[in-house]
Image (cartoon, rainbow, N blue to C red):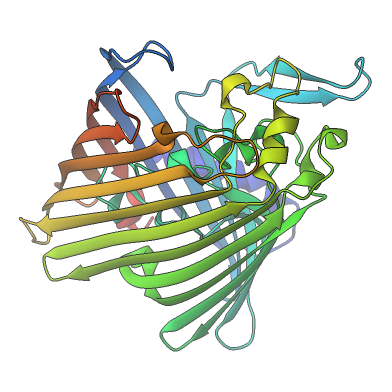
Length: 410
């Protein structure tokens, strides 16, 4: 299996270097993937208060990445994701169809996502420049991408209800180190507020439904980091700011600003056998009532219906504590507990009514067993509750089996 992955990733990159005239570069490979079995409780619809049980199996993601070191100071990194077995569709906007219509196009052969593609150049001193499709360092889920960076099945149980998952944007990043401190400044394309929804706030605004990306509105990201969150010993303060109105297809439906601001405090640290991961993210959407009204009148193919109402302010607080019960060179066995609270309607504007059903609390416990350099098994039991009266709690159990080849240093 490993040799097949290496051959595939090499073939992906050979055409580029065949035409550049560069000397043969140093190439590093990596791959990680996971399969899951989940038994969970859900509801028939938003009005139901009687949960029923379902069971699902999934291949959430298979990631293949290549790093091409052109010389000691520059590299190109490419990361390709195969999501949920490779099925999906895209949306298109046709401005000449009646009054402008959204159309769905089924992608034959499944969906493959180019999640990262950037050029990285080391400047004088401890400074770097990246250009391309980059991860946004605004949450632990985006900072810590390896399955070995966290013990739970996914990086955060709460991020999916507030932010885009696996959030990458096209732009430029400047990175500089000052001793143990790191500073990053990014200018990237912004979100599209046409796809903001009550159930995941700004998460749907990540522009991956269409074949091209609207970039009339840009966004800025700034982070100040102490230590290294990527390796599990660091803290960071992050700020995201950008308007989203200009990236709408139906701009005539909204004349006011739809500015998004996020402030994040992130931490990950290991104290002997004890591990800590925590984050606090607060967000603001200006004119959220106007955005809700504009979205409620979109075409039926993208109309949010009952999910048009948006919160003006949202927050996410999460913490994960773990204990390594079996620490040696060959394997680790970590037990953990985690708590996530996310409220995407913490404050509302205008005529929007606050909905306590979107003030969620997720409590989890479980374990992660790594029995060699690349293979792992994760087990997680979670309870989901919200602040709405009369809605019972639900449970889920997830078993995940996967690998991460980073430990092989290919």
